[in-house]
Image (cartoon, rainbow, N blue to C red; front, side, top):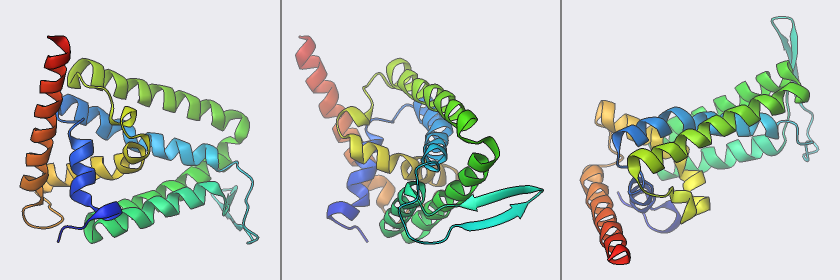
Length: 202
């Protein structure tokens, strides 16, 4: 059943989808969006905890690890809760991936230490963002969604690429008719953008 407002999945998906209709651009985002999220959590691991809760410490394979209740945890939790509220099935899978990213990034952060981790994060972010801008400039030929709505684009990106994969490979739909509804909205948005672009050029 369709929802409205903040939890309007049709609106979110159609907005993001209108900027990602080219198959190559979609593939680029599928490869690069989650590494951006993961590496962001990796650097956020080093933000001092602001919860007065004991960290979870344990040893694995001869290394000591600490799961800190810091900003990285908050970000992962907010994304997870939001995705799960958008769609019980795909959203719950996305939420699980968010938590897995938080735990895995904590492991990597403990192994690398800050002096090496920030360099890894910098490289990952540069490569992934560059790849996405190339996808838009060369293949999509439309500016990224973040230039029109930064918050919505950044928050929806991980869930969008996951839902796109589920829909393409398994024919998944949050509810019957979802794909046809959002596809119609996407095509209308693209048509309006093309007409507006043509008017500016003429």
